[in-house]
Image (cartoon, rainbow, N blue to C red; front, side, top):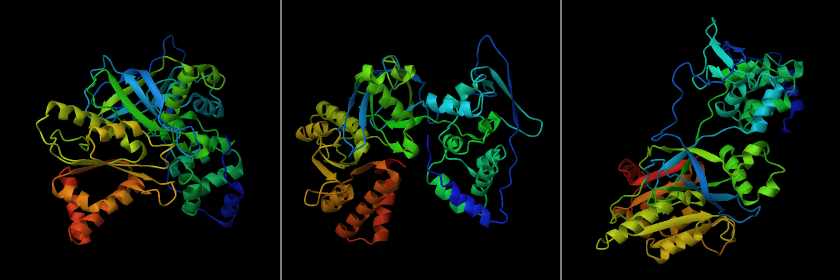
Length: 470
């Protein structure tokens, strides 16, 4: 792994600083011992850390089916749908709910750390951790008994961005003087800009540090004391739950810094590829990655925001979901179709769906399903936006579609519509909210401050719901 890290520039910066101000740091002096055991156990000092927002036990799900949703093209991210067989899971979910997938680190990345620490002979030997007499404390997510390989694979987030105190601890176990000076400078007050540029902005993690600073060889206790917990990854459920034995999810594979892809999405993609073309993939994948019978550990998460469709058919819906943000709405619409069939005498409110992607020929995921709901009048209006199509071919962004249909949307809001927004928190969710504010200002003749209050009141009343990620 080669990381673009300009050591020369940082060394020049350290030379200009006659002295640097280091943060105060007291090393968490936990102690580790190894002892051969007939049976390896994993045991915590207290309770095993709870799964975030869990409302079910973990279920080892088989993959019943999988399909690619986007074209095979450099112009778009790879997106997939997976159907899990959850027969016997006792999962009870509604549209808008999410699952957590238990993450594990890649074996080659774990092996790189084990090699750097010269722990190959001890990686699979039973260890015992204990608090030192100098105030050391075992982090709650680290087992008191286990193996180094298990902990680095299942408990520690080895891709997390390095914090300054962690860098300082690592610097004390770096033999090369220039490398040590750089690490000290990066965690100093004077090196704040360099830390932001080279560590924060580049998502620099322990893997990158070991690949760059070859003489850094800390005791493993330093890693166990400083690496944060490896958390499950949340994903929206695609289907409605009308069939209790299947659960669908969709995901896109995001390319990350340093030639990496998402931890869980990359793993799922390898499983899918191995199922679709096992013979070609065997050359480059590990046995675990290529196991045709791989089970995926999943659990149901509590719907904290109430991001679920109203069961009252008369309430109009405004659904906004670019890219994989459309995923939960498939379940919304399935359930609404079922309710309309069961409540044929009830007049249903209008449903407006806003979808956006780069190119309709490449990444218009669930196009056939959405058009089917449109034909069956489950959706009344489907407004699409394509950001990589030249001008003259419709909306470029979802907020453009909102502005162009502002008068009708404001009318729906006045009739009691609920707005759902699913997707990127940093950009899309903010821009969509601003678009609704502008529409209310224009068509209800309100001040911007009053329009903001309208949206704020809708949020308080669970009529403006957001399921977004950063």
